[in-house]
Length: 466
Image (cartoon, rainbow, N blue to C red; front, side, top):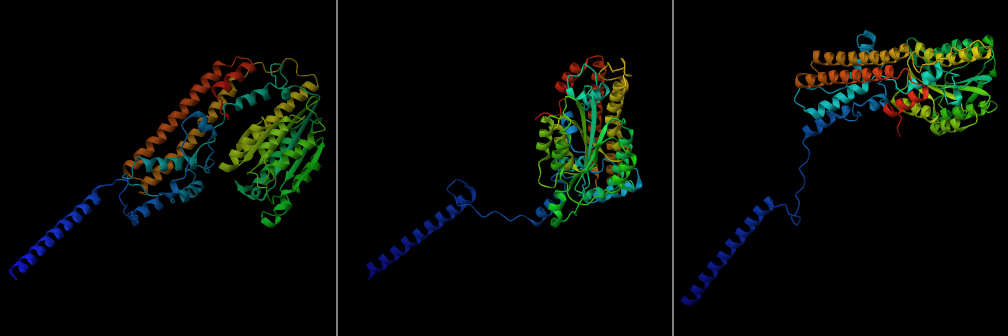
Protein backbone atom coordinates (compact mmCIF):
# COMPACT_ATOMS: atom_id res chain seq x y z
CA UNK A 1 0.00 0.00 0.00
CA UNK A 2 2.78 2.33 0.90
CA UNK A 3 4.52 1.61 -2.35
CA UNK A 4 1.31 2.22 -4.30
CA UNK A 5 0.74 5.53 -2.49
CA UNK A 6 4.31 6.67 -3.20
CA UNK A 7 3.91 5.73 -6.84
CA UNK A 8 0.70 7.78 -7.10
CA UNK A 9 2.32 10.82 -5.51
CA UNK A 10 5.30 10.55 -7.83
CA UNK A 11 3.04 10.28 -10.88
CA UNK A 12 1.02 13.34 -9.87
CA UNK A 13 4.19 15.36 -9.27
CA UNK A 14 5.58 14.41 -12.65
CA UNK A 15 2.24 15.29 -14.33
CA UNK A 16 2.16 18.71 -12.64
CA UNK A 17 5.72 19.38 -13.74
CA UNK A 18 4.84 18.54 -17.35
CA UNK A 19 1.79 20.82 -17.25
CA UNK A 20 3.90 23.70 -15.89
CA UNK A 21 6.48 23.25 -18.65
CA UNK A 22 3.80 23.09 -21.39
CA UNK A 23 2.09 26.18 -20.05
CA UNK A 24 5.39 28.00 -19.99
CA UNK A 25 6.12 27.02 -23.59
CA UNK A 26 2.73 28.25 -24.70
CA UNK A 27 3.30 31.59 -22.98
CA UNK A 28 6.72 31.93 -24.63
CA UNK A 29 5.17 31.05 -28.01
CA UNK A 30 2.54 33.72 -27.47
CA UNK A 31 5.22 36.30 -26.65
CA UNK A 32 7.25 35.21 -29.68
CA UNK A 33 4.28 35.68 -32.03
CA UNK A 34 3.68 39.16 -30.74
CA UNK A 35 7.23 40.25 -31.60
CA UNK A 36 8.31 38.06 -34.50
CA UNK A 37 7.15 38.98 -38.07
CA UNK A 38 8.85 36.27 -40.13
CA UNK A 39 7.25 35.04 -43.34
CA UNK A 40 6.04 31.91 -41.55
CA UNK A 41 4.08 33.78 -38.90
CA UNK A 42 0.33 34.11 -39.14
CA UNK A 43 -0.70 37.71 -39.98
CA UNK A 44 -3.09 39.36 -37.63
CA UNK A 45 -6.15 41.08 -39.17
CA UNK A 46 -5.46 44.76 -39.95
CA UNK A 47 -7.04 47.24 -37.66
CA UNK A 48 -9.99 49.01 -39.28
CA UNK A 49 -9.53 52.63 -40.28
CA UNK A 50 -10.59 55.01 -37.63
CA UNK A 51 -13.63 57.14 -38.41
CA UNK A 52 -11.42 60.24 -38.07
CA UNK A 53 -9.10 58.96 -40.84
CA UNK A 54 -12.01 58.45 -43.21
CA UNK A 55 -13.31 61.90 -42.39
CA UNK A 56 -9.91 63.46 -43.20
CA UNK A 57 -9.79 61.59 -46.53
CA UNK A 58 -13.19 62.96 -47.56
CA UNK A 59 -12.19 66.42 -46.38
CA UNK A 60 -9.24 66.62 -48.80
CA UNK A 61 -10.90 64.78 -51.68
CA UNK A 62 -11.84 68.03 -53.46
CA UNK A 63 -8.16 69.05 -53.76
CA UNK A 64 -6.68 65.61 -54.44
CA UNK A 65 -7.11 65.41 -58.22
CA UNK A 66 -5.77 68.76 -59.40
CA UNK A 67 -2.75 68.49 -61.74
CA UNK A 68 0.60 69.68 -60.43
CA UNK A 69 1.01 73.44 -60.92
CA UNK A 70 3.51 74.00 -63.78
CA UNK A 71 6.85 75.75 -63.27
CA UNK A 72 8.68 75.37 -66.61
CA UNK A 73 7.85 77.58 -69.59
CA UNK A 74 6.71 74.69 -71.77
CA UNK A 75 4.38 73.38 -69.06
CA UNK A 76 2.99 76.84 -68.23
CA UNK A 77 2.08 77.43 -71.88
CA UNK A 78 0.49 74.00 -72.33
CA UNK A 79 -1.40 74.13 -69.01
CA UNK A 80 -5.10 74.83 -69.69
CA UNK A 81 -6.39 78.27 -68.79
CA UNK A 82 -8.49 78.10 -65.63
CA UNK A 83 -12.28 78.40 -65.52
CA UNK A 84 -11.91 81.85 -63.91
CA UNK A 85 -9.26 83.15 -66.32
CA UNK A 86 -11.72 85.73 -67.58
CA UNK A 87 -13.00 86.71 -64.13
CA UNK A 88 -11.57 89.30 -61.78
CA UNK A 89 -11.81 88.82 -58.03
CA UNK A 90 -11.98 92.58 -57.55
CA UNK A 91 -15.20 92.74 -59.62
CA UNK A 92 -18.14 92.10 -57.30
CA UNK A 93 -20.14 89.97 -59.76
CA UNK A 94 -17.11 87.82 -60.60
CA UNK A 95 -16.17 87.57 -56.92
CA UNK A 96 -19.52 85.98 -56.09
CA UNK A 97 -18.90 83.17 -58.59
CA UNK A 98 -15.32 82.65 -57.41
CA UNK A 99 -16.32 82.54 -53.74
CA UNK A 100 -18.82 79.76 -54.49
CA UNK A 101 -15.89 77.59 -55.59
CA UNK A 102 -13.62 78.68 -52.76
CA UNK A 103 -16.26 77.65 -50.22
CA UNK A 104 -15.98 74.08 -51.52
CA UNK A 105 -12.33 73.86 -50.46
CA UNK A 106 -11.35 72.44 -47.04
CA UNK A 107 -10.32 74.65 -44.14
CA UNK A 108 -6.60 74.77 -43.30
CA UNK A 109 -5.33 75.82 -39.88
CA UNK A 110 -1.60 75.46 -40.46
CA UNK A 111 -1.08 71.99 -38.99
CA UNK A 112 -1.83 69.87 -42.05
CA UNK A 113 1.64 69.74 -43.60
CA UNK A 114 3.28 70.47 -46.93
CA UNK A 115 1.59 67.66 -48.86
CA UNK A 116 -1.84 69.12 -48.17
CA UNK A 117 -0.65 72.68 -48.86
CA UNK A 118 0.73 71.62 -52.25
CA UNK A 119 -2.57 69.96 -53.19
CA UNK A 120 -4.40 73.12 -52.17
CA UNK A 121 -1.99 75.24 -54.24
CA UNK A 122 -2.47 73.01 -57.29
CA UNK A 123 -6.23 73.51 -56.98
CA UNK A 124 -5.93 77.29 -56.79
CA UNK A 125 -3.70 77.38 -59.88
CA UNK A 126 -6.13 75.14 -61.74
CA UNK A 127 -8.88 77.66 -60.98
CA UNK A 128 -7.00 80.82 -61.98
CA UNK A 129 -4.24 79.79 -64.42
CA UNK A 130 -3.68 82.45 -67.06
CA UNK A 131 -3.79 81.89 -70.81
CA UNK A 132 -0.11 82.35 -71.67
CA UNK A 133 0.55 82.62 -75.39
CA UNK A 134 3.01 80.25 -76.99
CA UNK A 135 6.19 81.98 -78.26
CA UNK A 136 5.79 79.95 -81.43
CA UNK A 137 2.74 82.09 -82.19
CA UNK A 138 5.23 84.80 -83.06
CA UNK A 139 6.17 82.73 -86.08
CA UNK A 140 2.55 82.85 -87.22
CA UNK A 141 2.48 86.61 -86.64
CA UNK A 142 5.63 86.91 -88.68
CA UNK A 143 4.23 84.94 -91.57
CA UNK A 144 1.17 87.14 -91.66
CA UNK A 145 3.15 90.37 -91.49
CA UNK A 146 5.57 89.11 -94.13
CA UNK A 147 2.93 87.50 -96.33
CA UNK A 148 4.30 87.32 -99.85
CA UNK A 149 7.91 87.87 -98.82
CA UNK A 150 10.42 85.72 -100.74
CA UNK A 151 12.13 85.05 -97.39
CA UNK A 152 9.31 82.69 -96.40
CA UNK A 153 9.67 79.14 -97.71
CA UNK A 154 6.16 78.12 -96.64
CA UNK A 155 4.18 78.13 -99.92
CA UNK A 156 0.95 78.86 -98.07
CA UNK A 157 2.19 82.40 -97.39
CA UNK A 158 3.34 83.19 -100.91
CA UNK A 159 1.28 85.33 -103.28
CA UNK A 160 -1.24 83.38 -105.38
CA UNK A 161 -3.75 84.51 -107.95
CA UNK A 162 -6.80 83.78 -105.78
CA UNK A 163 -7.77 84.20 -102.12
CA UNK A 164 -10.39 81.90 -100.53
CA UNK A 165 -11.61 82.04 -96.93
CA UNK A 166 -13.90 79.48 -95.27
CA UNK A 167 -15.33 79.82 -91.76
CA UNK A 168 -16.47 76.70 -89.88
CA UNK A 169 -18.91 77.78 -87.18
CA UNK A 170 -19.95 75.67 -84.21
CA UNK A 171 -23.74 75.76 -83.87
CA UNK A 172 -24.02 73.24 -81.05
CA UNK A 173 -26.31 73.88 -78.11
CA UNK A 174 -23.51 75.15 -75.88
CA UNK A 175 -23.18 78.23 -78.11
CA UNK A 176 -26.32 79.49 -76.37
CA UNK A 177 -24.25 80.22 -73.27
CA UNK A 178 -24.03 83.87 -72.26
CA UNK A 179 -20.84 85.96 -72.35
CA UNK A 180 -21.17 89.54 -71.14
CA UNK A 181 -24.91 89.60 -71.69
CA UNK A 182 -24.92 88.04 -75.17
CA UNK A 183 -24.85 84.45 -76.34
CA UNK A 184 -21.66 83.07 -77.84
CA UNK A 185 -23.53 82.61 -81.09
CA UNK A 186 -24.57 86.27 -81.20
CA UNK A 187 -20.98 87.35 -80.64
CA UNK A 188 -19.67 84.94 -83.25
CA UNK A 189 -22.17 86.23 -85.81
CA UNK A 190 -21.16 89.81 -85.09
CA UNK A 191 -17.45 89.05 -85.52
CA UNK A 192 -18.03 87.05 -88.72
CA UNK A 193 -20.18 89.82 -90.18
CA UNK A 194 -17.47 92.45 -89.58
CA UNK A 195 -14.71 90.21 -90.86
CA UNK A 196 -16.35 89.10 -94.11
CA UNK A 197 -17.38 92.65 -94.90
CA UNK A 198 -13.74 93.77 -94.60
CA UNK A 199 -12.38 91.25 -97.11
CA UNK A 200 -11.42 92.33 -100.67
CA UNK A 201 -14.23 92.20 -103.19
CA UNK A 202 -12.34 89.65 -105.29
CA UNK A 203 -11.89 87.21 -102.39
CA UNK A 204 -14.17 84.19 -102.28
CA UNK A 205 -15.91 83.50 -98.97
CA UNK A 206 -17.68 80.44 -97.56
CA UNK A 207 -19.48 79.80 -94.29
CA UNK A 208 -20.16 76.29 -93.04
CA UNK A 209 -22.13 75.51 -89.86
CA UNK A 210 -22.25 72.26 -87.94
CA UNK A 211 -24.47 70.84 -85.20
CA UNK A 212 -27.30 73.23 -86.12
CA UNK A 213 -30.12 70.66 -86.16
CA UNK A 214 -31.88 68.60 -83.54
CA UNK A 215 -31.10 69.07 -79.86
CA UNK A 216 -28.44 68.03 -77.39
CA UNK A 217 -30.42 64.96 -76.33
CA UNK A 218 -29.27 61.42 -77.13
CA UNK A 219 -32.26 60.77 -79.36
CA UNK A 220 -31.18 63.61 -81.65
CA UNK A 221 -27.47 62.78 -81.70
CA UNK A 222 -27.45 61.12 -85.13
CA UNK A 223 -29.46 63.95 -86.71
CA UNK A 224 -27.31 66.65 -85.15
CA UNK A 225 -23.98 64.97 -85.92
CA UNK A 226 -24.93 64.74 -89.58
CA UNK A 227 -25.89 68.43 -89.63
CA UNK A 228 -22.98 69.96 -91.52
CA UNK A 229 -23.94 72.49 -94.13
CA UNK A 230 -22.25 75.11 -96.27
CA UNK A 231 -24.74 77.96 -95.99
CA UNK A 232 -22.78 80.61 -97.92
CA UNK A 233 -20.45 80.57 -100.97
CA UNK A 234 -17.91 80.01 -102.22
CA UNK A 235 -18.68 83.41 -103.68
CA UNK A 236 -17.82 87.08 -103.38
CA UNK A 237 -19.14 88.93 -100.36
CA UNK A 238 -22.79 89.94 -100.49
CA UNK A 239 -23.88 91.92 -97.45
CA UNK A 240 -27.61 91.18 -97.64
CA UNK A 241 -27.07 87.50 -98.30
CA UNK A 242 -24.53 87.16 -95.50
CA UNK A 243 -26.79 88.99 -93.05
CA UNK A 244 -29.80 86.79 -93.81
CA UNK A 245 -27.62 83.66 -93.65
CA UNK A 246 -26.23 84.53 -90.24
CA UNK A 247 -29.66 85.50 -88.94
CA UNK A 248 -31.02 82.02 -89.63
CA UNK A 249 -28.31 80.14 -87.73
CA UNK A 250 -29.37 78.99 -84.26
CA UNK A 251 -27.37 76.87 -81.79
CA UNK A 252 -29.03 73.52 -81.20
CA UNK A 253 -27.22 70.20 -81.05
CA UNK A 254 -23.96 68.26 -80.92
CA UNK A 255 -20.42 69.09 -82.11
CA UNK A 256 -19.08 67.26 -85.21
CA UNK A 257 -15.70 69.02 -85.47
CA UNK A 258 -13.99 66.24 -87.45
CA UNK A 259 -16.71 66.12 -90.07
CA UNK A 260 -16.62 69.90 -90.52
CA UNK A 261 -12.88 69.72 -91.32
CA UNK A 262 -13.47 66.90 -93.79
CA UNK A 263 -16.23 68.87 -95.49
CA UNK A 264 -14.01 71.96 -95.65
CA UNK A 265 -11.40 69.90 -97.48
CA UNK A 266 -14.06 68.90 -99.99
CA UNK A 267 -15.25 72.52 -100.33
CA UNK A 268 -11.75 73.74 -101.14
CA UNK A 269 -10.74 70.82 -103.36
CA UNK A 270 -11.54 72.90 -106.45
CA UNK A 271 -8.98 75.49 -105.31
CA UNK A 272 -5.55 73.77 -105.29
CA UNK A 273 -2.74 75.45 -103.38
CA UNK A 274 -0.53 76.10 -106.40
CA UNK A 275 -2.93 78.80 -107.57
CA UNK A 276 -4.84 79.69 -104.40
CA UNK A 277 -4.22 81.06 -100.94
CA UNK A 278 -6.71 79.14 -98.80
CA UNK A 279 -7.60 80.16 -95.25
CA UNK A 280 -9.81 78.23 -92.82
CA UNK A 281 -11.20 79.49 -89.52
CA UNK A 282 -12.60 76.87 -87.15
CA UNK A 283 -14.66 78.43 -84.35
CA UNK A 284 -15.72 76.04 -81.57
CA UNK A 285 -16.58 76.26 -77.89
CA UNK A 286 -15.92 72.63 -77.07
CA UNK A 287 -14.59 69.23 -78.02
CA UNK A 288 -15.80 66.76 -80.62
CA UNK A 289 -18.98 65.05 -79.35
CA UNK A 290 -19.93 63.03 -82.45
CA UNK A 291 -17.33 60.26 -82.12
CA UNK A 292 -15.15 61.70 -84.89
CA UNK A 293 -11.38 62.18 -84.84
CA UNK A 294 -10.72 65.89 -85.46
CA UNK A 295 -6.96 65.53 -84.97
CA UNK A 296 -6.67 63.01 -87.80
CA UNK A 297 -9.04 65.09 -89.95
CA UNK A 298 -6.81 68.14 -89.40
CA UNK A 299 -3.71 66.19 -90.42
CA UNK A 300 -5.41 64.98 -93.60
CA UNK A 301 -6.43 68.56 -94.36
CA UNK A 302 -2.82 69.71 -94.06
CA UNK A 303 -1.67 66.96 -96.41
CA UNK A 304 -4.38 67.64 -99.01
CA UNK A 305 -3.81 69.55 -102.24
CA UNK A 306 -5.50 72.68 -100.83
CA UNK A 307 -2.90 73.18 -98.03
CA UNK A 308 -4.85 75.84 -96.14
CA UNK A 309 -3.70 78.26 -93.46
CA UNK A 310 -5.71 76.94 -90.49
CA UNK A 311 -6.72 79.13 -87.55
CA UNK A 312 -8.50 77.39 -84.67
CA UNK A 313 -10.41 79.61 -82.24
CA UNK A 314 -11.52 78.17 -78.92
CA UNK A 315 -14.40 80.32 -77.73
CA UNK A 316 -14.53 80.24 -73.92
CA UNK A 317 -13.69 76.53 -73.82
CA UNK A 318 -12.91 74.33 -70.82
CA UNK A 319 -9.62 72.51 -70.19
CA UNK A 320 -10.56 69.43 -72.24
CA UNK A 321 -11.67 71.63 -75.12
CA UNK A 322 -8.45 73.64 -75.04
CA UNK A 323 -6.34 70.50 -75.12
CA UNK A 324 -8.14 68.94 -78.08
CA UNK A 325 -8.41 72.12 -80.15
CA UNK A 326 -4.70 72.84 -79.64
CA UNK A 327 -3.97 69.37 -80.98
CA UNK A 328 -6.23 70.03 -83.96
CA UNK A 329 -4.32 73.23 -84.76
CA UNK A 330 -0.97 71.48 -84.31
CA UNK A 331 -1.97 68.62 -86.63
CA UNK A 332 -3.03 71.12 -89.29
CA UNK A 333 0.23 73.06 -88.90
CA UNK A 334 -1.97 75.99 -87.92
CA UNK A 335 -2.46 78.34 -84.99
CA UNK A 336 -4.68 78.16 -81.91
CA UNK A 337 -6.07 80.92 -79.74
CA UNK A 338 -8.40 81.08 -76.75
CA UNK A 339 -10.88 83.93 -76.87
CA UNK A 340 -13.48 84.95 -74.32
CA UNK A 341 -15.35 87.86 -75.86
CA UNK A 342 -16.11 89.80 -79.04
CA UNK A 343 -12.80 91.67 -79.01
CA UNK A 344 -10.88 88.40 -78.88
CA UNK A 345 -12.83 86.98 -81.82
CA UNK A 346 -12.37 90.14 -83.85
CA UNK A 347 -8.63 90.21 -83.20
CA UNK A 348 -8.22 86.66 -84.44
CA UNK A 349 -10.17 87.34 -87.63
CA UNK A 350 -8.03 90.43 -88.17
CA UNK A 351 -5.03 88.17 -88.74
CA UNK A 352 -6.57 86.95 -92.00
CA UNK A 353 -7.67 90.49 -92.78
CA UNK A 354 -4.02 91.55 -92.79
CA UNK A 355 -3.19 88.82 -95.31
CA UNK A 356 -6.12 89.92 -97.45
CA UNK A 357 -4.93 93.51 -97.47
CA UNK A 358 -1.44 92.50 -98.62
CA UNK A 359 -2.93 90.21 -101.25
CA UNK A 360 -5.16 92.98 -102.56
CA UNK A 361 -2.22 95.40 -102.76
CA UNK A 362 -0.23 92.80 -104.66
CA UNK A 363 -3.11 92.21 -107.05
CA UNK A 364 -3.36 95.92 -107.80
CA UNK A 365 0.47 96.21 -108.06
CA UNK A 366 0.49 98.82 -105.28
CA UNK A 367 2.61 96.85 -102.85
CA UNK A 368 5.97 97.91 -104.23
CA UNK A 369 8.82 97.29 -101.83
CA UNK A 370 6.77 97.67 -98.66
CA UNK A 371 7.00 94.01 -97.70
CA UNK A 372 8.15 93.60 -94.13
CA UNK A 373 11.88 92.94 -94.08
CA UNK A 374 12.32 92.46 -90.36
CA UNK A 375 11.22 89.31 -88.64
CA UNK A 376 9.40 91.11 -85.88
CA UNK A 377 9.24 94.81 -85.27
CA UNK A 378 9.64 96.33 -81.84
CA UNK A 379 5.93 96.94 -81.27
CA UNK A 380 5.15 93.26 -81.93
CA UNK A 381 7.66 92.16 -79.34
CA UNK A 382 6.43 94.64 -76.75
CA UNK A 383 2.83 93.63 -77.41
CA UNK A 384 3.56 89.93 -77.00
CA UNK A 385 5.53 90.53 -73.80
CA UNK A 386 2.85 92.89 -72.50
CA UNK A 387 0.25 90.18 -73.00
CA UNK A 388 2.28 87.83 -70.78
CA UNK A 389 2.63 90.57 -68.19
CA UNK A 390 -1.06 91.48 -68.08
CA UNK A 391 -2.07 87.81 -68.02
CA UNK A 392 0.20 87.20 -65.04
CA UNK A 393 -1.00 90.32 -63.23
CA UNK A 394 -4.65 89.26 -63.45
CA UNK A 395 -3.77 85.71 -62.41
CA UNK A 396 -1.77 86.97 -59.42
CA UNK A 397 -4.54 89.37 -58.33
CA UNK A 398 -7.05 86.53 -58.41
CA UNK A 399 -4.79 84.23 -56.39
CA UNK A 400 -4.00 86.90 -53.80
CA UNK A 401 -7.56 88.13 -53.59
CA UNK A 402 -8.78 84.59 -53.00
CA UNK A 403 -6.16 83.89 -50.32
CA UNK A 404 -6.96 87.10 -48.46
CA UNK A 405 -10.65 86.22 -48.57
CA UNK A 406 -9.92 82.75 -47.19
CA UNK A 407 -7.74 84.20 -44.43
CA UNK A 408 -10.26 86.88 -43.50
CA UNK A 409 -12.97 84.24 -43.15
CA UNK A 410 -10.62 81.95 -41.20
CA UNK A 411 -10.72 79.28 -43.89
CA UNK A 412 -6.94 79.27 -44.36
CA UNK A 413 -4.81 80.48 -41.45
CA UNK A 414 -1.38 80.23 -39.84
CA UNK A 415 1.41 78.44 -41.64
CA UNK A 416 -0.98 77.30 -44.39
CA UNK A 417 -1.67 80.90 -45.45
CA UNK A 418 2.02 81.82 -45.31
CA UNK A 419 2.96 78.83 -47.45
CA UNK A 420 0.36 79.54 -50.12
CA UNK A 421 1.11 83.26 -50.16
CA UNK A 422 4.79 82.51 -50.79
CA UNK A 423 3.80 80.21 -53.66
CA UNK A 424 1.95 83.09 -55.31
CA UNK A 425 5.06 85.28 -55.08
CA UNK A 426 7.29 82.51 -56.43
CA UNK A 427 5.03 81.87 -59.42
CA UNK A 428 4.82 85.57 -60.28
CA UNK A 429 8.60 86.03 -60.13
CA UNK A 430 9.16 82.87 -62.17
CA UNK A 431 6.80 83.87 -64.98
CA UNK A 432 7.96 87.48 -65.13
CA UNK A 433 11.53 86.19 -65.31
CA UNK A 434 10.60 84.05 -68.32
CA UNK A 435 8.95 87.04 -69.96
CA UNK A 436 12.05 89.19 -69.50
CA UNK A 437 14.40 86.59 -71.00
CA UNK A 438 12.08 85.92 -73.92
CA UNK A 439 11.62 89.62 -74.65
CA UNK A 440 15.40 90.18 -74.64
CA UNK A 441 15.91 87.22 -76.96
CA UNK A 442 13.34 88.54 -79.43
CA UNK A 443 14.90 92.00 -79.52
CA UNK A 444 18.33 90.48 -80.14
CA UNK A 445 16.95 88.39 -82.99
CA UNK A 446 14.91 91.18 -84.52
CA UNK A 447 17.34 91.67 -87.40
CA UNK A 448 17.57 88.00 -88.33
CA UNK A 449 15.83 86.71 -91.43
CA UNK A 450 12.70 84.64 -91.14
CA UNK A 451 14.27 81.20 -91.44
CA UNK A 452 16.94 82.01 -88.84
CA UNK A 453 14.33 83.29 -86.39
CA UNK A 454 12.10 80.28 -87.03
CA UNK A 455 14.94 77.86 -86.29
CA UNK A 456 16.07 79.65 -83.13
CA UNK A 457 12.56 79.95 -81.67
CA UNK A 458 11.81 76.30 -82.39
CA UNK A 459 15.06 75.17 -80.78
CA UNK A 460 14.81 77.30 -77.64
CA UNK A 461 11.05 77.67 -77.18
CA UNK A 462 9.70 74.51 -78.74
CA UNK A 463 6.52 73.96 -76.75
CA UNK A 464 5.04 71.55 -79.32
CA UNK A 465 7.32 68.61 -78.64
CA UNK A 466 5.84 65.16 -79.10
